[in-house]
Length: 480
Image (cartoon, rainbow, N blue to C red; front, side, top):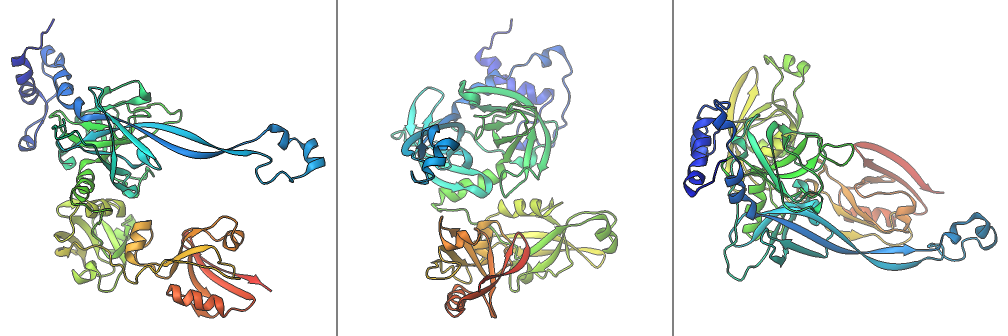
């Protein structure tokens, strides 16, 4: 039986390094090996878990919702035959307040109490409680919530006492096959550690956030693990466990984590006191290079993303890019899709610059891209429409690159966008939706909110509305 003495614990990581792991950035170039002896196979993760687990916390949230309670009698056809709907829209029901509870995990990343978790863990919460591994509990304050990355930053106060925390490791140092541990609170059974390997990198198409560029692992991840830590063999955080692929709700060996590069960007924004994350803007629309495109561009194989539209005077335009250029890499990192490019831009800091490798006229060249945020031009001018017209009850705004980026829309689009539609309003009855882009009312082209307001007032009793929804433009008539 092996006894874990202090000497053994202190030398265990060194043994892992010399045996078959790369455990720190300076050793990133060391050769990795499979276990070469029975002794290496028997090495334990216990010292690593003791070091990292105290920084992984449980998160409990509460929120109050309105619930309609009614008797099944009011839905009975025989009852309705005699009384109809005279008991109101709730069918004679009454409204009561109900408390909903949910759970998840989080990771302490500073000794002062900043915690990173998933947005979906704390979304809509009225109260957030954090429980440490030593069973201490704290009320948490929401510092920053970034739905586009499915990340959120919380703060707890421990009266000046230093808290355990994890250091970040650059997720770009990961390789497929590297060993990782997942730590969290699955099914609320208590803190649990599972092990696995990195199954894939740069996974996209998962659909849980706008910035889809995930680490895939086969370490068992289940409900409650969300927001927990994915750590490497040096005890540093390389990802925040976010989603699983499952048909039953349990782990099927396919889990996804937000890379630490994105975690660092969100954490930096929280530390600087920003209420939301500002990200660099390219000022261009791109598409994946297919085999046919690659052949027409004299490329030996499909790679990179092609610029198909640009914002005049935007960062890409000022950097000297042009429509038809292919972006191959950003700061030395290959980009294989628009999502990969968005991720690389999203991890960079405003005010800096990036080196972009492009392909043009059969040759590669490099340009310098200034990292600036999307402009708020025109100003939003958020307005609630009222009066006797079909858009009454809709909240609209001028669509700018900044608002488009915030809403996950085409940042080159312009016009007036619907942000919200009130229930029971004329706009709802005419089936207008959040995200609809109003382009024209009768003969008046709509570029700004003030154009829309004026056009609605002068339209009389008939409105021909041209709008864009889901990338498709349609025109329909309302009125006589």
